[in-house]
Length: 169
Image (cartoon, rainbow, N blue to C red):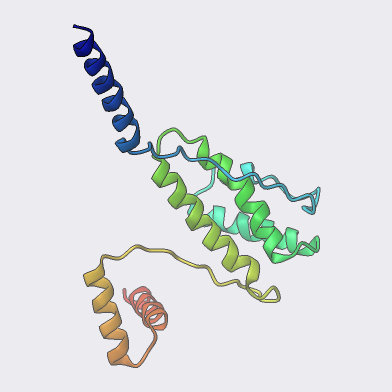
């Protein structure tokens, strides 16, 4: 009787340990990195106001204005990116209507946009705006073929196609 009890105890403990070892770890929840930029100008408008009541176009304009303020304050491009992404991330993290993957995608997209603006030429009257549009691989392949046929880069071909489409009635 005691041998059975000991064997049962060993088997149950072994199964418990195997379950701990084999069980996959749960995915970590979305969190923002701890970033603090003390070099930010004190008079820069807070990023939380950037998107309040704004659509994509006006938010882009507000972001460009904020970027100009930070540049005028003498902030280096890397610190501008850190400051803006560090301020934007908690806004996304607090959005309970989207998944953690969607939050990460939004922050990544914003970081790409801000990086392009921060490292772009500062003397331009109009800044280029990076538009991030996901395309399925077959459509992207068609775009690449059309661009190669026209002797253009992918970006130049897409820009030309958009301009042509906008001039049509």
